[in-house]
Figure 1 (tube, rainbow, N blue to C red):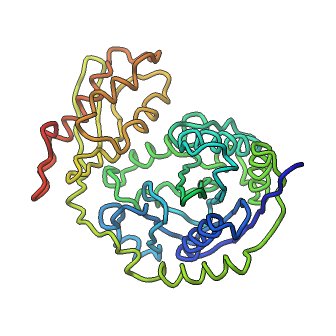
Figure 2 (cartoon, one colour; figure 1 turned 120 degrees about the vertical axis):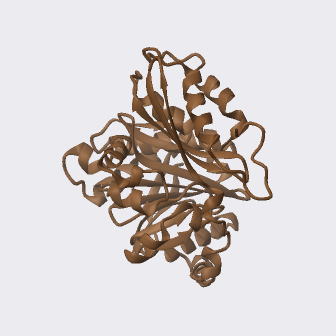
Length: 365
């Protein structure tokens, strides 16, 4: 007998309401008060922090305030993102028994591959890019992430339908060469929206239907339209009362100087290589790396995949992580070697001052 799951569309909402709904639906699924559910959602302009992030380190708060962009904290981890009405959010609230595993890597691959099929049904060649992105021709169109609460899972993603890359750069505190034309062009090479890829603006309902069909096929279920039940409504009201308060957003506050944005460039036999690094100096961790320069790498997606593999790693693991990434890969770099990528990142890290009261570690210099 085919199982039935619920589908709800909570529409366009402020960030606090959407995050409160995250908590309410996840808690209700864990408590057995609600069925497995696919939710579609949209946000008014919002800068969303990961649960463990500091707004001062991740966002340009002055720009957000001047442009009416709400700052909010998610209940899930991951990085800060910019969300506005030109994107579709999709979320699955499932029980571990729906998945047959608690391994998040396997879950991410399964759900992202299904989402990629749904996105692909609109007319683009979407594919899963480990660890948790969906891309078209090497350009990211959807980022995803998930978290367990007991046996209940929230797995969520965003799909860029029409997207303002420049606004993303302004909202997020990332090294963007002071928002030069080149920085914006580089970002557009890495991030794509569905409208640009299709040459038309797809209807939101078309995209939602394609995603729902893909998830239904993957899990062998039928979706029926539904609404929040009374238990979820009560949990939502309680969650919103907390999440709307400044204490929720300011729960974690760390100065921007503890996550410097570092940059270095070095000429190698294979070309000029530049690295920009977001570095957590208290934890001695590489948060994210961006590579650019006068270099030839084929296939092109290798650089993007390398950047993804270096997210959130301990600085002491840099060289081994780069070597492991390139091991067994057929890559043509016309004179560049894997160690060159590690060397330019290490050069950037060497410019970071030590955190007061927290040594950077033996590999930072």
